[in-house]
Image (tube, rainbow, N blue to C red):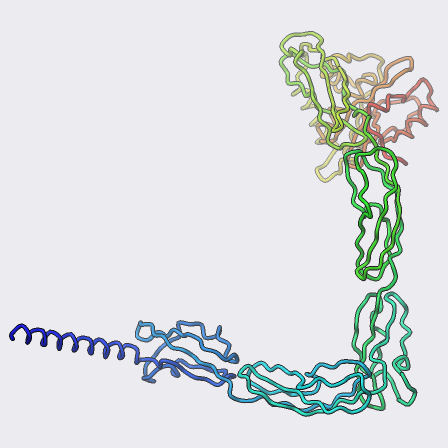
Length: 539
């Protein structure tokens, strides 16, 4: 019996605890409403709407601006009150049917009109769709009763009765894209009983491309909408060019087109792709198709060339260097090729012993992408140094500081160098071509030298001034002659600072200039191996 009483007592205690928890939980949630119902379209929503005790201060945790108050549905909301978060729900409903005014429509024969055109001034708090109850017959001339149905997001419906008048008038006038403007109001007439005009000037309508552009007509003083339809039925007009490419390269179809005339965008493609592995000539069939499927067929000639020509190594020459000095084997050396822009150049200088006087061989090898190879061998003469580079460079730099400024162009600096050498070094018929530093020092300090002296002094001046240059040597004739090629950024030109009996200007000369001078002076004066040097610009 005692055990039974204990069980009853324990049960009562548990029941009391459960009731207390329920009451506590209810009290916890009773600080905000469980849900809030709003008619769609309400544009203001305060925190007080959710609070049971309006005297309390709460705040939204949820960003209320992200809730579309014009869209029916249920939305969860978080609210903070006394540093605790509470949950509620906004339920947006739409119970009000849409309103609108009826509009009577006059339309040309066979021109379909959207239902929305039969109403105006639609009023509703949510989005409204407009559709026909039964679509009218636009192919039947005369008056038609029309009923359109407005339905909002709350599925509230309103029926609006209106009238459609179909008149015996063209619903559109068509023109070819690119044609001149020649459209008149009378072009829309199917019968002559109507008094017709454009509501406003339409002469600025663009007929250059395919499009549909709506206009307004005044028909017996009623506004009627119609279309100007621009169509593209004309195939593209193209100009073709024949093409030459290298074997292994490919060309897209557009490469054969130099000019296209069409009123719309155009795609060019091969009818059958060419064989890019076959050398010689072959016909290429092209299809030129515009955006409206108008196609022009064209034929061009593709010539595929095989590259059998080796690259040319330019600027290599025998050099004299000094014991234990670094040798710049690539300085002034260029490689050109009939096909490739970047050609691999290998230099084998393994025979050179810079620590021992003597003459050594250096082999230059250039290989293009087709495997064609060219080779040149030069001699490197290693001698003892009698004048240091620092000595010569100091002399040159001092002069450059006097005759040039930082804001000068390279060509202006080159001209100042040319004038200084011409004015300060006189011609004397001997030089030591094996010791270039010594020869340059002699020319700078004594003011005398021969053409090699002029050349080497010019080279050091130009190099110190940051101007690309290379040596040119005469071929043929009774004696040697040396001068420079320079590039100031606009191509290579000949630069000869050596004085001449005729005193002609020899600054920035083209190949054609050299030919004229050679004819005047004779003795192969400016004859040189053109295959070894870059070409100058053509006059």
